[in-house]
Length: 191
Length: 195
View 1 (cartoon, helix red, strand yellow):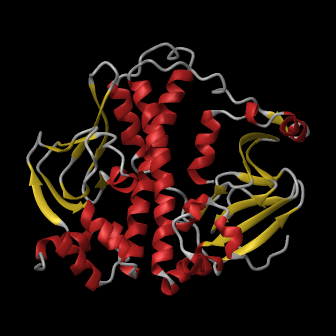
View 2 (cartoon, rainbow over the protein chains, first blue to last red; view 1 turned 90 degrees about the horizontal axis):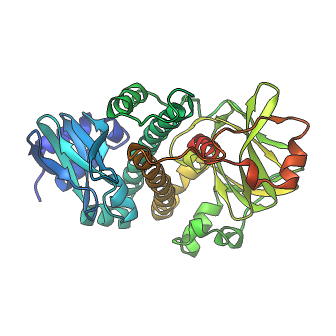
View 3 (cartoon, each protein chain N blue to C red; view 1 turned 135 degrees about the horizontal axis):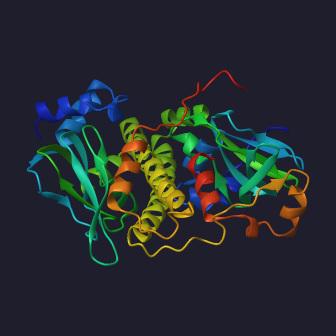
């Protein structure tokens, strides 16, 4: 296996992997597979087995869910340095949503086999990597909670209680919540 | 409040640690301490820096959200529950108050101490973080399911979506009467966000 210089450079750029040592960045660069997607191309489809996750080096993707009436709804967007597809990689369930390239997208793909091998290695690198994946999932959960709370609030207002939630509104909520983060506090200090 | 050492046997009671072997449990136990709370004693308050996860050995605690001079009960945790586990992956301010409803025995896992066990047993640390991640994914799938329902336009307002505010003085009686009826999905959601 050879060092993929471009992959390693992308890894080093990603805030998610800021805690990794230079050696670990190179290791990850060897394991991750680089691929470009054209606008409209699918990275993965809802319902499929989750055989890997994607780290976005550049570009923008749309997160798409099928509603009960088979209509597709864009429930989110993810851009540069985001992680997508990690849920089914972790819990072994089917893909919970589809991901489609909106622009030309540069991704690094982590295959399930490599992820599991890394976990089993029992190294400090495995710990830091698992931590990074956990944080990306937590960020996604915060975002999903915000989206849901926005939808629930709309339902509860008297005028909007009976109206159907339109796609535009969902996207507005997402755009608004994307930059929300929990208040960081110092780990030490307060007893 | 007191603190003392935690044994491997106590950790083994929690499915959360099911994947860990004896040595790994020993490593985790090194980052744990016992906490006892008297009835009505506060474990932490909104705005406190969240640096620990908690496992309930016995007793029960309530997650409360203060609204003026009232409290809303977001969730309760009984023996076998774990809460605040997101603190093991990233520290943030507590978003709710937690108080003991009765005499309660907790295992506290301090995030800083936990980060140190990975030097001793990286595999133990990986397994615990993996379990935390699984729980995040579980919630994420549940939330996504709700979003999907709303998108399909089939959602009906849940009966508990308007949380009744509870007078501070009434609170203990209410909980004693029937804790579960006072909890709504919406409340649980907020509680689970950063409890």
